Image (tube, rainbow, N blue to C red; front, top):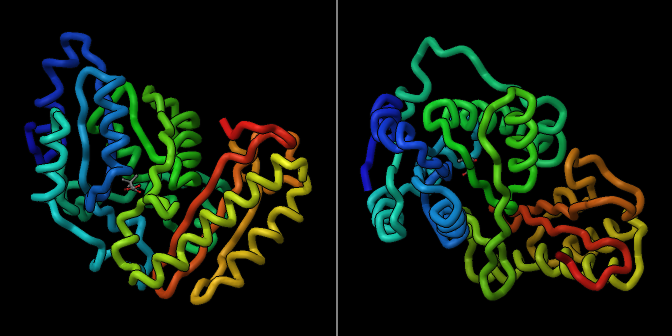
Length: 288
Ligand code: PAF
């Protein structure tokens, strides 16, 4: 595995495979890698000829008072995991390399970036969209892999790539969960063992929604109220939102009559957790 720091080095490392017509897969990450990230890496290794992974804790997607300084960083451990998977190129840019002092352009994804997590974290999705567009510009991948765990991020990136005619196919990959149902996240390491137990209520509420829809309930506001009630009654958990939304534009739906996603966010102690699930077609027995 070749480890590089600059955009020029990435382009240099990819010049030959590109000339040979080999496909390039890309997995952008902020490091602190876990099985969720590795599932994206494996999807890229399976679907592309060459796999590039970036590790960059992007300051522009953290708000004031958020955990940018404390965000877990362990590049040696990350590099060892990626080398063992068979990754070809690891790109670890620096903050001044990505954001020279005179850089002034940002990418605003519009209204899809100001709802849900975007409402709680103003500017977050502009930071995400800006860094992703820059990374795609540097790597120029055929395919880029994002986890469905950050479902709004996946949709923001798909919309930005479509709107800006970027020639990369954005591939969403399924959420990876621990045995207790908690969706894997680099931030889970902030949780105490009690908080972990309470945090599984997000997955329990989403699973109950799936069961309720399968039993024939298509009333989205009622499904939202049931999720909210379950999450709010869990000790130490503060609900931010529990909503049923259109799978593509993330607008709330009133009935399950189109592809929909149930999305939740809550604080467990001081840690913010998010989770989501595809809503089955009303009355269906298979969550696809
Ligand atoms: O999901 C993440 O780790 C980040 O938001 C991303 C996509 C790497 C952009 O910094």
